[in-house]
Image (tube, rainbow, N blue to C red; front, side, top):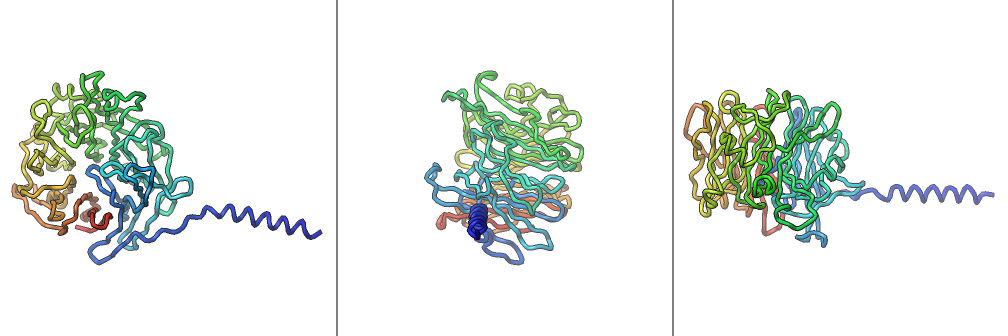
Length: 446
């Protein structure tokens, strides 16, 4: 009669083995080098974008997100995929990191430089929100959330089937809520270009009390149906100030998606009164179109216009909000076929001032910019080909810019972002090394 408990024990052992068979193999550390000055992570070759916000902070912790190395994938257009890694550190702790999960397995996404890179935001309770792998996916993929830095980072369904999203840009409000910009292309059933490029800009809100996302509105759209031609939206930047105003920055391409963008635009959303206004507080009805701009030209902060010239265009705009100096300042790359200049304008005395040229280098810049203010000094961060990473700085009481090289590099591509914690600016600098087909991500204080 002993065979029954023996069989039962074997059955339990078998079930137990099946339950534990899904344990994930540990991944190698992504940290290549740590010095007193910076930390270098090994990132995927696809970890490159101009619109993203891959660095954030909460309390005394800095958080970064990046595409980490994947493998050959026959299902991907470029035959390669990547994983998604979150890393975080405080002044008193070492770097910790984790890899995003999907159904208890490591999530992977197809490589797509300039589109499927991560944006991160931390809500008021310390929950981590990351958007990644987004380039017009038909199911709205992909959004990840972890309840805190010690919890697993899992894929979530909050944006599932709500649109075909690209270019996520998120920012945490002073009250701990999060606001999010996304470009949405329609779920088309035909291959008509008129339908394919009806790209609109959406503004979403995370209510941190009820822990829910909801769509506020389409803030901008210019469609063939309503405006006789398509002008897809390219979100640039977002900032939520202490007065509960969301500052929204974007560009337009004409007829279809393109790296040539025009008529850089700025809009405010009053969170308390739930209305959109122009920079001079004129009430506007969303979505904003290029027809709206004809009636309210103050929406446009710079002069490029595809109907006047297709040779002058812009890329990579960023916001600075300062009640003492500008509401807002805007930096952007002014482009022609042969030149790329970094410019800044600001709203002052009820007008956009003539743009000032920050650098006059002949060296071509990469499609990446960031701007911060510290101790009444404006700091503009940019990268030059064959040169490396630089900052141009000036006091708000002066006119001359002082240029300082932060990092010397001849990397084939450099993309950057910044996060300011009190008086410390933390740089996120991704260097693509073509000979090794990988990226070296450097985190460094400035």
